[in-house]
Length: 188
Image (cartoon, rainbow, N blue to C red; front, top):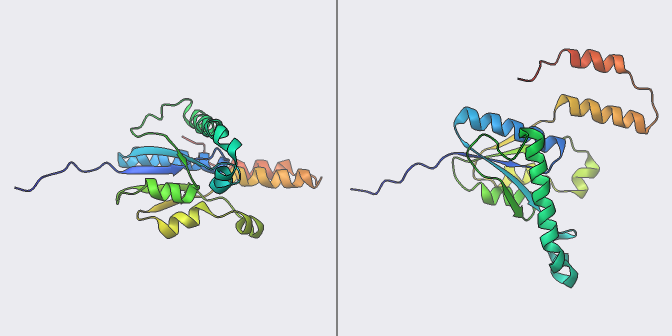
């Protein structure tokens, strides 16, 4: 008689950086995990400033690695507090701080067929795309599991537009903003 292995539990591996887009993705991943009866794995990937190569060249960097990792852990804890009010997500799973480039780190962690990678898909201009690699594009190209890209909150889009208007010292049309957000359904 062949050996039977218990089925693995599906995991939602969500990239968390503390940005508004990643917090929106964390909320969506938690909702999906509850709906699917899956585990929630918030992951914050970090690299030393200047990358691993620069850190290996500098003798002072070896001393700072522990501080950088502590700061990454604190940023993950802050994101969890911002979304869940504390460390407890109310779901099975675990939070991870992974050293490495975010895209490859998420793909490496989400190594099961029934995993799902959840990422925030913010709006990116040409300059941003040229200077910073896209975590979402990397995950879509290399993941062996499905990838869920969560669009930014409409409120974030309005906030960004208001910020741009403020920087350019343009008049802010608050009446228009009130009309736009009056139609948004309340969050449950």
